[in-house]
Amino acid sequence: ADAAEGNVEHAGEAGLGLVRHLVRAGSRAPILCAGASQRDLVGKAVTDLRLARAQIIGSAPFALESALRAMAGLALDGSAVEVCLRVVGVPPRSAVVAWEEATAYGQPLASQMPAHVVAGLAARIPSLWPPGPYALATAAARVVEALALGSRRRFSCFVAMDAGPLRAAVGSMPVELGPRGVERVLEPALTRQERTALENALEKV
Image 1 (cartoon, rainbow, N blue to C red):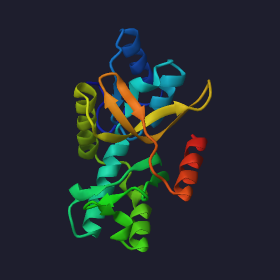
Image 2: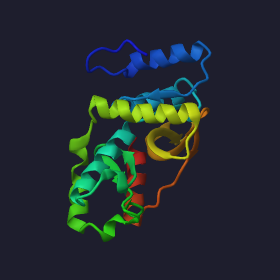
Image 3: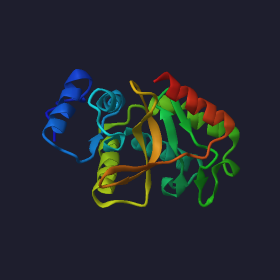
Image 4: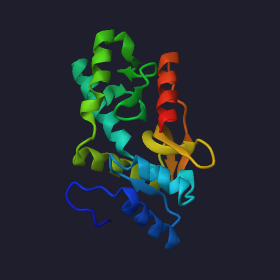
């Protein structure tokens, strides 16, 4: 629980101060940043507070991913439940969709959707960010459940990756979660062009 009001998310020095308070209180539990603007907070907690990279994550990319799945389901005149895709990178402008591994109804998505429709969905990503409060809350609830109970499901979350001793590159990546936080950061199946876009996005942060 926190004291944020209205549309304000904990960020900047105030947000870092709250995380510092939790750390000084001796909490070793995973810390979840549910807001769309808290990617920088994840990075600062790792670099400034020396928090373990596995201990703090952000769930907003999972909400974006859900919205994109819903749009893909509509484009297929079907259900989003049958669509599986990953959003990695740094939303909204540097988000990368792993179209290479995306599926719908057990078949590759690219075989069911024309290239111009795929391109249109990718172009809509900036307008889907930031996700609304209900989408963010739903994504956070699913991630908290996985952190508390463990889960075989993989979630796209903001996670800090090693970018040198004084810097953490924070981007959306598929992760496996458990009571200790991030159990494993996974490499999505990307085309050469998608991988280059992901590397460029992480180099800029």
